[in-house]
Length: 65
Image 1 (cartoon, one colour):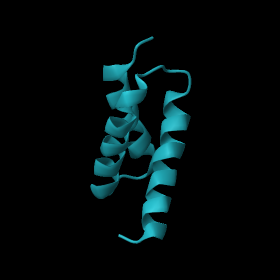
Image 2 (cartoon, one colour; image 1 turned 60 degrees about the vertical axis):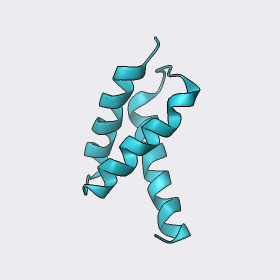
Image 3 (cartoon, helix red, strand yellow; image 1 turned 90 degrees about the vertical axis):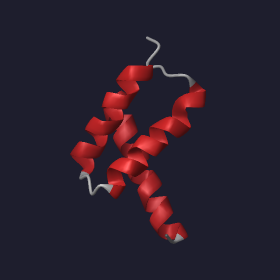
Image 4 (cartoon, one colour; image 1 turned 180 degrees about the vertical axis):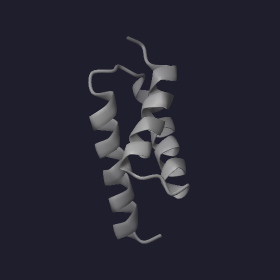
């Protein structure tokens, strides 16, 4: 995977996270876990809506508020 592809993947994950999890508090040390869920979702061929849903489902299990 090229640097450009990694950058685009990370941008998709960040956009999905911000769109679906705004205002939800999670432990900062769990952010790499959120990224792993996002990467796995993208590797399965998820579109943006599915990516957001996958991330939101995971965040619900680690939220603190």
